[in-house]
Image (tube, rainbow, N blue to C red; front, side, top):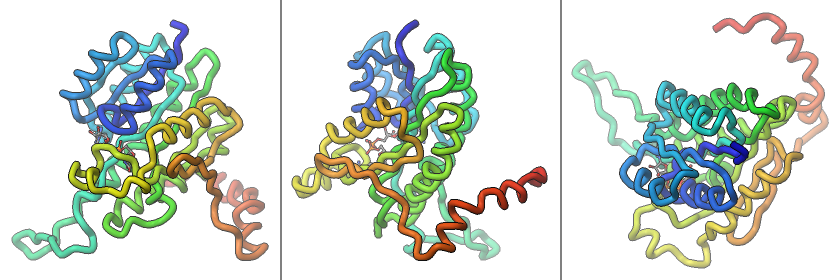
Length: 277
Ligand SMILES: NC(=O)c1ccc[n+]([C@@H]2O[C@H](COP(=O)([O-])OP(=O)(O)OC[C@H]3O[C@@H](n4cnc5c(N)ncnc54)[C@H](O)[C@@H]3O)[C@@H](O)[C@H]2O)c1
């Protein structure tokens, strides 16, 4: 099969669905992964043979591992793109007082499902992607992570979501140059507000139109990362009709620059010993 193959998570709705449709129109074969089975299956049936729908919860490692195995075989032993896109808002609020205790009075843990879906599942997905991308005819591929404007600023109503999206930016910046050496480019998009299923319908209806980023700008960001092999470890803010490449904060002094850029040989020395697990 000569068509490139992509896995897109969170593909039943919003950004994932729009990217799926765009890639299919562009000749890709797409494995749509989503926890929402009914609509995903129906959309996949409409899109035809170029797509395969897999009902999975990305926060389950065995389910994600099975997804990659199926996708690689369905794609004819090739996999060029992993769009790590599935995401959810906070499932419990750290700043609110809705905690519960067990019968001994011990406070039950906060739900960290948001970290599991938005961050841990992305890391595990990249881990799996590397295994398969290395087996491509030309070894390598691309990872595009959907972070958020909340990965650059803060979203006061959703502290855990904010933390998860910031974590994705750190991951992208650290991993991008390392993976590039294996011909895998890792980049992240940081959308501003886009009308999708993430936000309740009544809020969508009332949201000021001048602050809504069109899906076409998200697609432009995807196209940029798909077509430009020189980009890895990059973060692009997607707002209204523009893409803004965002770099890490400036160093306050030469010592901080040295620690971040020139101290590598010291760390390599330190990590010569096997890491204890
Ligand atoms: N819409 C926005 O304004 C906006 C802004 C910045 C970032 N984002 C990010 O964009 C990404 C896509 O969200 P969207 O806006 O298209 O929302 P959406 O709700 O329309 O789509 C998200 C999809 O992810 C799926 N999903 C949720 N949990 C899952 C899981 N555990 N396993 C598999 N699939 C799961 C949902 O079923 C849904 O189909 C998310 O990571 C979100 O944080 C969205």
